[in-house]
Length: 325
Image 1: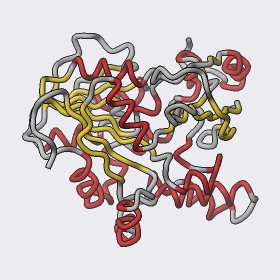
Image 2: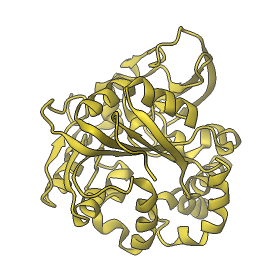
Image 3: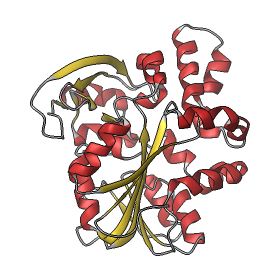
Image 4: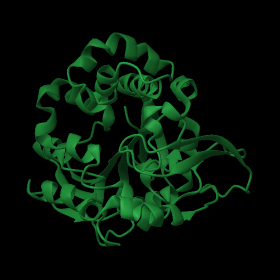
């Protein structure tokens, strides 16, 4: 498929609508789905409406029907905001916040070999490299992968599914807001497990679909991010997915972050046609919150303890080894 950022996207819209697929629950449940909501691409305004269903056997939420892997490229053009917000220079004013989040994002491990799936433009790879880690990345956007490679880091420009089997053997595999994008999360996690040394770690973050925000905002919930987010995990369904792929879950924690609540409020204002300038500012908050997040820590901390923030991080281990402390 031709790179969509180099052609007229309107001309591709009809093709994208046709390239949809229906998929069963990846946890092997019998067909028993309940429609939950329907939404559209709010982040970029690209065409299509998409349904989220819940497996009534295990509770996993997923986008179904969904764009096929080829059709999904339409929704990952050069203008896709996460690619730009991950550039190392894009968040210079947020280094203190980054250090706080990094401290709770990965296990307390000595430096070793690390792979980041969905490394975007390389900001996290750079932070870990400066801590003494030998870093490698995988990134589906060729533009973002090129920006990452320009920093001097080896990166596979493609999806996890197309990454070569000899990608390496790692002490740590990280994926920040990437598992929910995979067409086959169980298969992807199994592949990552095969690349991890015995006792090695996996650290992944995903939106928390169990929080009350998701019910409050419905299709205006910022982390819903249709159609790019194909799965919408709760702590329990995330645990089940990791376990099915052979990972031993050590800890799932809620992040101290309220940026999604703020951005969702912006979407609601947009839907009501109110306060256009303020709504745009609120929607952009997750990409530019920076130091402002520090002022929200007194509120976000107790909410995270109650399981009511919209992002969570899981640490899992490949067999043996000590648990995270």
